[in-house]
Length: 239
Image (cartoon, rainbow, N blue to C red):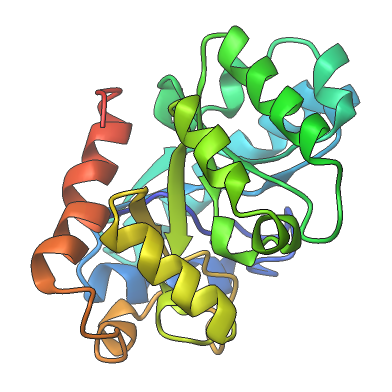
């Protein structure tokens, strides 16, 4: 399996606060069946793209060294979680923020209220630049709950949807759970990620979470979302 959304990388956002935490999160990911993780730290400052990339890549290098010492054979791949805003429209080259140098760009909307027309404009900007947007945790957005038609608008643009496993298990509330189940079962969402941030609450121990999945998410659906489709993203293939 490959996790394409997490905050395992240390001291770069609100995820792992130090390298020891990163290593333990990676250890738990590997022990729970992951062979690779795409580190996707939050990115929002479009005026400092190079600085972000340099910091991320340095910390990936340091994490890889630590994993070698600990003999944890987990593959670490580059990525980011792009916070969409008007600043995107004037930004420079963002190729280094894609998942594993592919066409796929993990991105997120504001969790609170935002203008849907502007949200679609941000998505269109990514598409016009040649990227395939992967929208992180659509089930968590206030505006999508209020305006479900935006899902159709995004599907028409061939946006890929990634739901959080914690949403499927109900940890993000009943509304997020039902929407995430519906999107997976209808084939609207193609990926399941951990969105792991720590060792206690939003962790990488996916075997624990699998036990809490609703009956609608059967083995075949789960494997397709965490193994088959995630590998297509990594290999830059069409889902």
